Each structure stands twice: as structure tokens, then as C-alpha cells.
Length: 293
Ligand code: NAD
Image (cartoon, rainbow, N blue to C red):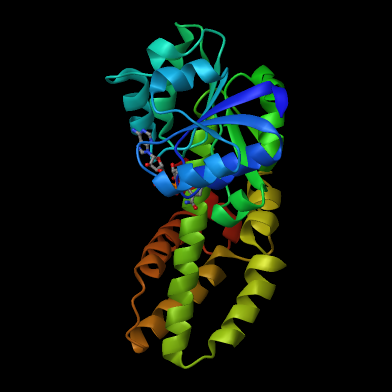
């Protein structure tokens, strides 16, 4: 057992349980607490965790507290409700909220804890249960950068990378924005494939084509957003009018095949508005100016 390091872990659900198991595998002492999750608590105990049945006992067990809860509101209830964790946490402790929380809750919780000499960082994780099980999560961390090194053995035990995103709440903000990009990409892909399927195309052919020409070799973030938009060079080599034409064709196919295409309609509306405003011959990457109006 790594005698220098003891962690109090709250929230032993789908993600929290495998994360706590990773800490145990790294020989870190782990004290667990959850209102439910009886099966996971039992398994964690079998693997060497210590189960605490009160917030008071939990808080006095460790200087590092990890939370993996449904939301920042639940964390606030645990910290400031009745009974509350806040009164039992030892000054000098560090709380790592690894849940996906709203940064506004994180900022207010951080301020309230700071007045009690308790540090807090937001450290949400990218990657789901599979990555939690093999300890390869990516941490997006907000708060005092200097605290990262103090928590390094914890991050190393659970994940494969730590990115410092900025002041407190930045990790939670970037996590939500990244999930927005992921969700939008997932929905546009599903919409495109269902239109293609209605047109009569094979799913395997579409999957291979999308992987090779869109996501894998030619992802818009890597090929356009970073090198052409964020550098303000706007020189991808394709006119925005041509992209508008392509989306119009896609919308036409969706109409002909009676396919649902709400995202396509919305994207086309934005694209057409930009073509009207800046002209069809401008580079497609100038679409980014829509968000800087
Ligand atoms: P989950 O519902 O499986 O686990 C949450 C745990 O918190 C449960 O065991 C629950 O009993 C416990 N809990 C709730 N209220 C409590 C309280 N007041 N006191 C003590 N314990 C309490 O959820 P999950 O899938 O493990 O997700 C946890 C967090 O991680 C969420 O914020 C989620 O958005 C985020 N996340 C989930 C995934 C995923 O793939 N599931 C991936 C990345 C991030």
C-alpha cells in the first residue's frame, strides 16, 4: 500500500467503481462512500477498499477527495446540505470533482471551499467505462495548475493524460463543449447514414467512406478548423458557394427519400445566410465568421 496517499472516493457508479479499482491497483489507499451502489461497494471492499458509512468518517480518512457524481448540484448537496461533508473536511485537503458538472456550480463551490482552506479542482474525464476500466481516461483539469503535481499519482493511476484547461471551471466547460462537438458529429453522421440508406446505399460502404474521407484522414477539426480557421488564413481551397450547393443536394436527396434531416436543414440555413452575406466565392472556412458576428 502506498502509505503516503489515501483517497476518499464518493460515487461508486458506472465510472466511479472502475476508477476506484484503478487507484487500488496502484496501491493507493481508497475509502469509498455511496448512498446506493451496494454491489460495487462490496466488490471494492473485496479488492481492498475501506467502506465508510458516514461523511464524517470519510472526510477524516484522507486529504484527497474524489467525487464521481451525477452532477455539480449533487456535489453541492453533499458538501453543504444536511449532514454535510464541508464541516468534516480537514483544512489543506484537495477535492477533485471528476464528475461532469456545470462550471457555474464548480466556481461557487470552489469559492466556498477556499474560505475554509480546502482546495478544489475540476477534473472531468474524457472516455467512458471501457477507458475507466483500463485506466486510460483523459483528464481536463481546471484550477490552480500547481495542484496538478500534488495529485499526479492519482491522475496517473486512473488516466493517460492531464490537460490543464485554465482557471477553476475550465475543465468542466471544455468537457461539455467537447461532448457537444462529439454529440453533433454523432448526430450528423447518423442523419447522413440514414439518408444514404433511404437512397439505397450499403451501410458498410458508407461507413468505410466516412471513415477514410471524413473522420480518419480528413477530419474537419484537423484539416480545416485548426489550420485554416483558427489561424485566420481561410484558404482551404474550396468556395463556400460550392459547399452550399453540396448541402442543397444532400437536402434534396433527403426530401426525395422522405428522410428526417433537421440538422441538415439547420446547417444549410446557416450556410446560405453566410453565402448571402459574404458572397459565394469566399472560402468555405469563412463560415466561422457566422459565430463572430
Ligand atoms: P452513475 O449514476 O452510474 O454513478 C453515480 C453514483 O453516484 C451512483 O452510484 C450514485 O449512487 C452515487 N450518488 C448519487 N448521489 C449521491 C449522494 N448524494 N451521495 C453519495 N453517492 C451518491 O453515473 P456514472 O455513469 O458513473 O457517471 C458519473 C459522472 O461521470 C457523471 O457526471 C457523468 O456525466 C460522468 N461521465 C460518465 C461517463 C459514462 O460513460 N458513464 C463518461 C464520462 C463522464
